[in-house]
Length: 484
Image (cartoon, rainbow, N blue to C red; front, side, top):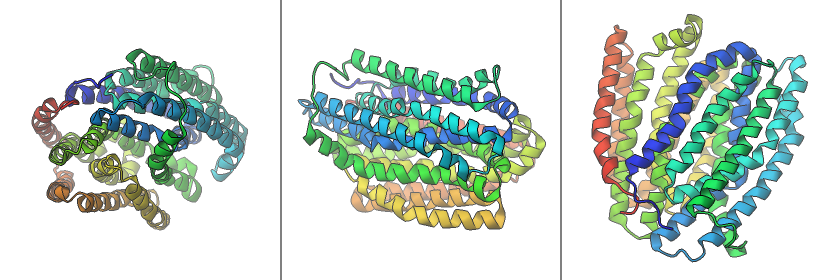
């Protein structure tokens, strides 16, 4: 089956809906969750959400490798062994999911011991983590099915399921509050939702022809190919979520768990806004891989430039609006005391959001061009630098130090990825330099906007730049098509 010849705009719109609507729901659900579970339980709930993402590293990069290999074969018209690759990948991921489940069941008491929890919550926390572990095989298998569907541009099908799952991620714990303030019922609901999600992805994959259980076989040569690409993805995925969640764990152990919501809530808001760059990269990555495998350097350079321009146009106005209106926004959303504590953190996190979003473009291109080792090695360099900076800044500046450290890591990551992609593919030097200049100017404008006295003027500025971004980016994504 050929990939759909939808425009990139169609696919991006589905990706944005699949993640954006649950984010809007989360905006209203988080205050109720925080009030219902209390600071400590809500802090633990944020860690549970983080663990769901972190343990997905046990797919050993096979989900992304499956997207890459299937896209390669579709791009070069060599589709004879696609079903072999697919079956090999999914069987392997199923086994890896069981391994992840076993490890979390065993490690749950140790994880709870690391956190500064009240002794009355420890048994409940261990049980919650072990229930969560039962959903991990489904999380990992879903990643493979999503990777398979992304390679075939089935973004509308993916996001019908993703939208429901995203709503349940917050809705299930909120619904369970009507029965109990314990996290045990909430984690049961989350685990069941993950199993149902996998069943839906499986059904869609079979219906669209991406998966045929009656054909294909487990092939060791395909496994070596998957792991050869995926092993570097695994290393990168092992380090990247660790760095992404290290701040929350260190705050809970070095400072105090009851302070975690002041960082976790704005941090989670910014993290969930990354659905925009993730939505874009989800569409551009298989296109990068297909262009690379088809040996079309001019089209690859053009696609890279378009991706960078669209990314900046989409993310920057939102980051500017949040930065400029953080004091008033947090006061209305939570309360004035929360705003006073969290506004400086949110400012730093918005800077990191821009840097992290733009960095995803060279990151995706390096992986799509068969160079995942570069991104993994860069993460190896960044991890000790970030860990030391986080520890020192937390000790000297409190929780705002964590926000400074996070944004500093994003700056380092962006600069290294941009430099490496320009060295690996010299044609990218000019667009990379242009984007770096745009980012620097954008951050300067953002910092200056916060000093505008009138919140209304700040709002008008943000909306105006957002409309300009939409007007510039829309013709580009409408022109790009998956099979061009």
